[in-house]
Length: 106
Image 1 (cartoon, rainbow, N blue to C red):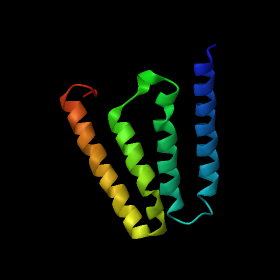
Image 2: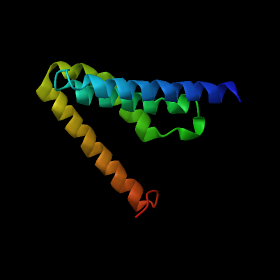
Image 3: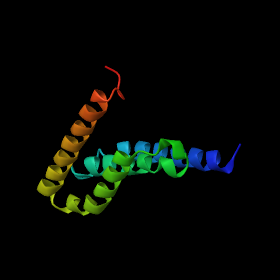
Image 4: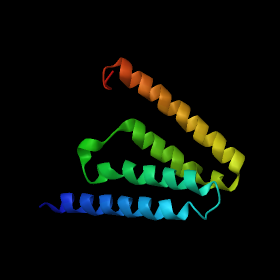
């Protein structure tokens, strides 16, 4: 097995552990931590192309960078929620664009 595959497998394991521990934490953490943890998990998934170059996606990279710059908004719940709403609009636009190009199943 190549070291690249092994590193990717370890990263996938880290993501799995993070998600499971986050699920437990969501019962007792402040309300905004759930969305924060989901964005952190997205960023971990978005890092997969570091291990498997074929997974590279410009939209996902752009979203990862945008999220990285704005995670501090978690300190202001209203602004954080607005930011996440903005991300959802961007995702919806991208889904529509990819659907029109035939990249998504109908």
